[in-house]
Image (tube, rainbow, N blue to C red):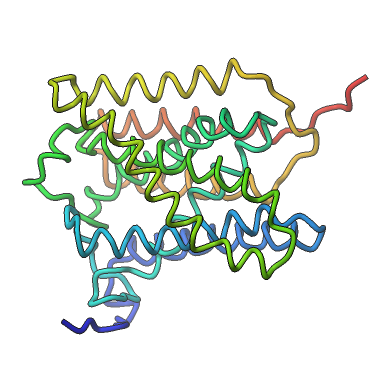
Length: 301
């Protein structure tokens, strides 16, 4: 069956909060691209390779979801692709969230295996306000019949958090390891698609113990709590070599993302105080962590 490639709505026909989300997310993604391109001009291709893998992985995940998973539906935004199923902003939300989380984790100076846990946790912290606000505002809706989405925190399926933790962490570690071999733009282009596909395969494998334990009756809430707390413990206890110079452009991405969702939450979550309190708590704590990671540090010695 053929799919309509692109459909464009007049922006004034969309709710204002939809258009603002598009502008914020695309702005964050563009800031990430500028950050990666600046690193390339300094001779460091790892950030640009990471960005390319994130973007490709995100598009692949969306297309797989529409064809085989089908447990959520996006609202109609200004620019829609793939039979009006894929909003343009969603192609940018992956680099907006994952790039900021991964590059911030790299400032901790962890080994690649440990870096994945820290990156996954930081990605979840960026995603959580988005997941809390999204269904309430109407940006998308979750399936009410899919058993994989049945267990929820604050009306958000906990599998969403595990997905970002596992897939995002794997992407961070893989791009760090493989990125050492990316010494030219040609190699970057050749490796982007296969590494993006490998992230998805490895992510599915990472879901196997989660699904197996859940099938045995272990609470999904307990599983995600252990996964998040374990990642936090690894991120905190592992040996660090914190970056000394601040990175204001990188810090601006989560700062804008958190600020926007905080304003949205204050406007739309006033009738659900538990969700609003969780949103304020997560954004405040995560913002403080980002400021700490990005602050300037004196040279050793």
